[in-house]
Image (cartoon, rainbow, N blue to C red; front, top):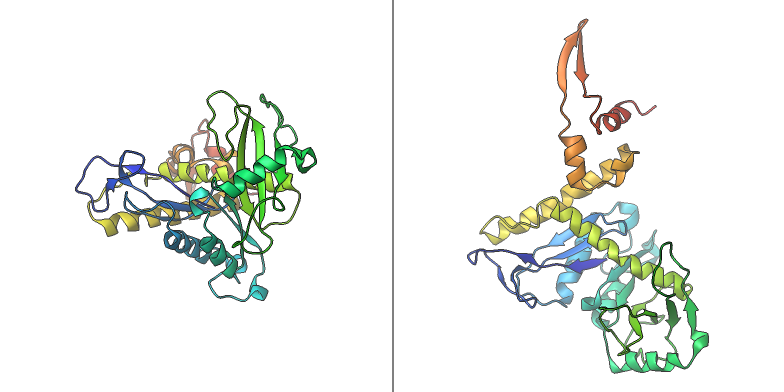
Length: 314
């Protein structure tokens, strides 16, 4: 549910700009979005901010929950009774959030989790044991136009040492043939590439694997933010840049609600850049005829039909 990206700047006098671990210079924000890529909140951080800061992630998560509808946010604030939760929430976090303390805070907010697992002796030992147990592996259904071999997932909760984790924690590992140039992870192998995550969700391992792989939707949220300006940090003052980033996230939320409520054409899933070109900047002329005020739209413009569908839904 949260991710991080570095923002590169070329002026060292901007407050908070610093060298980061990617050998660049800029800022290190944290982004939280919905499962369909709609940005909920963004926190601008200094370039040298810690990647695995629990306090920053909880701050962003609490702010994201606060902007959700009341029915969705009920029971998911710190200290809320679990009986108040009307709808379940699941946070998907990259490996920087794989901390027992962070998972415990999520449990205190009645929020489920699916967190990428870090490489550790316990995880490596569980993966090695699973190699000799073919019955633990489940084939992932082939996707259309899949060029690589079939992937497999396995639930290794019984083989891994998960002491210190909340109850119901499961270790799910996805293994697929290693294509040329792929990075190794969790388990050094020349033939396979393994990715694991910790989750407290019930269900078949293949379903959990699909749930975690959809964490890539955060890239859509980051792309929407980049198309709306936060990729640039124009001010020298820290508070001005932070406020600008938060306002951009709120404006994108309004745009997302407008798309879901008013649009039924392909523009419903369009990026802000396309919306500006086809809808926001739609040229029109106001004219008068027979004591009526008319708005004339260019018939050949791709956004004209979408705007007419909003004005006359039936």
